Amino acid sequence: MTEQLLDKSFNLLMQKSKEQGYLLFDDIFKMSEDYELDVQDIDTLSSRILENGVILLEQKPVNKKIVKNNTENTEDFEDWSHNDYEPVFSEIIEKEPEQELFINYIRNIVPPQRHEMQNLKYQLLEGNKFARKRVIEMHLRLAVKQALKFSKQFEQDLNEMISCSCEGLILAVDAYKPDENRKFSAYASLWIMNVMKRNINTKRLLFYYPTHVLEKYIILFKNREKFNRNFHEKQIQDDYLERIAEFLEVDLENAKYITSAFNEIQSLDKILDNDTWEVEKEIEKIDFKKVDRYSFEDNMIYPIFMEHFHSVIKSVIDSIPFREEKILKYRFGFGESFFTPIQELTLDSIGRLMGVSRERIRQLELKSLKRLRHPRRAGLLRPYWESE
Image (cartoon, rainbow, N blue to C red; front, side, top):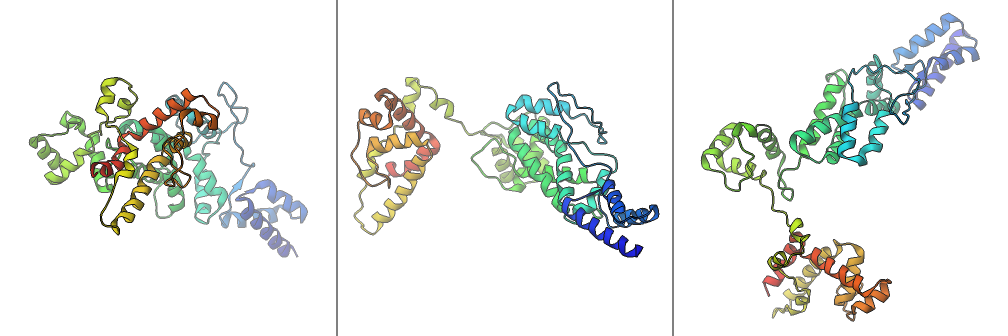
């Protein structure tokens, strides 16, 4: 009879562990009371549970709380990572204030406890949701620390690197094999670093570089002081290229390609934000009424050309704010289907439709046209007006 009660108690406790991801000692004691098990039976039951790799905790997992002065409440949790992450948290918030909510969430997470990872890693392998969540959360501190270090070392956007580091951590948790891989923190660090490296931005943000080029870029970036230069010059002398090629173990052509990643594309955003006459004279004016000036003798080509041209124009206009897009459509006679002509409206008429003044419409029109002159947008349209 006792054996049957033990089996029933064991099955019920195992079911509960699957539902919540862990068991408390109180769960075992309560079960022993319900089925009137003696001390020896409790010991046997506990042993069977541990042999099945169930996470057995003394108390229900809770998060510590933070009060306004950033001190913890009366709950005592020993941090077995033996690292002070507060300077890291403070620096991240100082650099990116929008991360404060996320950082405070990490602050609230109970730090790793003694031997906790030993209890979690095999449950992690079995797909225990509690174990997965706990391992991810207690290593978030490691992830943001590496993101901060990487962003400073390689001049990257901190928000983007935090996102990449968290992605790497999750990938590490899902791929971890406790009997095959090293200590989890070291294993996770490799995954985090790999994801950040794959997503590193070079100085040429609009250009895509394959992974093997990014790897060489990172090596060269870390060793740029060795060459006493930042490689920002558009033309690098042959002797430097030869040294770089030898250092990276690539040919001259690849060395030139890799160093091109250090050359920033001259941004015209600041120029476009400058309303001086001198700057405006240097910016090509785009006359969108040239749309109607295209003609082809070949009637088979013309519809194909116009369909492609319409899609390009629409993608350009759709890239500006919705209100400015509406003003341009009203002003230049574009219908709701974009190339269905409608009557062109005056500034006064548009102002009455949108409930604002004529002057405000004029300002928004100028602003929207200025956006369309941005090289990224104008470059898409240039082939059409140049081929006129």
